[in-house]
View 1 (cartoon, helix red, strand yellow):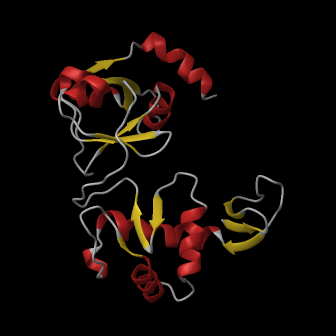
View 2 (view 1 turned 90 degrees about the vertical axis):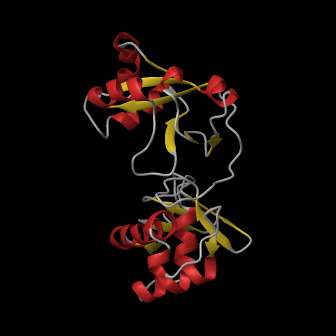
View 3 (view 1 turned 90 degrees about the horizontal axis):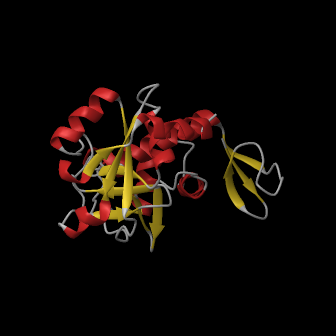
Length: 217
């Protein structure tokens, strides 16, 4: 659910970080409904909703708000702002009356986030998937960019959504970028990338993952 703190604005959960319970803005059901619609609009099917998306993934905020209102009579631009500003995963950004998804696109966009500066990145995968990736390289079948993690523990945690025993692949990001692979830093946890050839990938040994599992308990 989304609430609003008088001092700190919109937040998710029962209490703001300052301890204020705030006032209810969207319950869990409506937060999920609005979230699914915005994700579809900005990541997957803008054309189906009549949205003009430019090559960088931006659409007009006011027009998106109008589209939202046609699908959910209770929704409006203020609730759209609440969804974006309270999102702990920083999925979206708003600049100069435009809005876009920061990552997760299946539509063809050319994003312009800052260049990745980390020399190593990581990817969590199921065992069978990891073996295939190490053979043919890392690419996404459904998304415009490959989504990489900034730390091995983050990659392992992401991998647990696919399997109970994920493998973690290490990416020599600096070398790959020097060879022309485009990688962009989205936030503290995520880097998005063009396909990464297998020569820049290696598997972190299982024994080195034991500490990662302990950190997640």
